[in-house]
Length: 288
Image 1: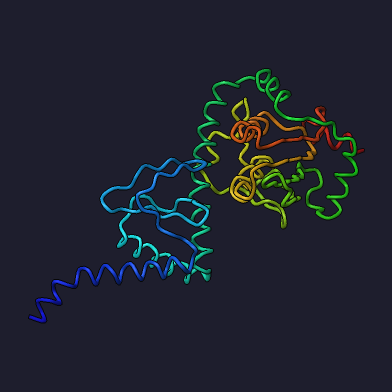
Image 2: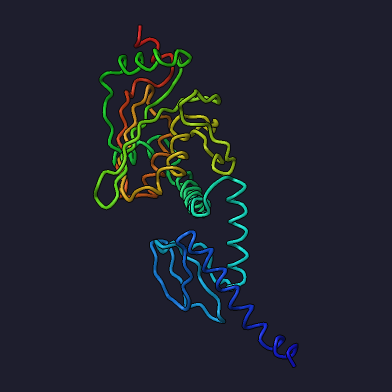
């Protein structure tokens, strides 16, 4: 009889234990389960959950997993706990990083889709220039020599090469929360302290000038990838100001315009450059 009662009670006891274990794991991270809810988020609309399945959100209502059972949730959280330990992170930090990665994958997909339409629509210099002047604030760089030599003094290997400074102001709820000054150089080699080159081959597809030349190592494309991956999640409005040794080529202008297209009124982009500085030779002649 005892064995029979134990057998009959086991499923309920087991379910209770799983639920307690899940709640303990969730408590460590600040995450929670939301059942039978219809929630509209910035990027998602979620339907009601049926058949006893659950949606897993964080405390800011960011979706982690949709339509999973409590048993699967426990297994996932155990998996994350193990991975966090291996990477020497807290469980919360590991899951925050996971959410950022998932977000970046969606952002990248949207960016690549927009690039495809831009390649078809703005396929001549005149079309590109027309939209460039309308959507991007262009300023003539007055102190080109000063800017160039100050950076060359710190990084002698940049002499005779193209590079740019990127000033990113990040706002949240109308308040400036961060301002970051970064540098990026054109070319396959990354200078210490500068933005890294891109190793994501998917993102670099069709990064070409109008004449078909690859521009995967340009300073602007390096910055845009870096911005999407590291800065976009931090705010809801941005001011990006660049200072360029050379004027942006057709590929770089197109990539900057794609960023503007995706973010719309959430970003203001200012470019400081000189239109006559088309090549490195133009810059060298000017500096003499």
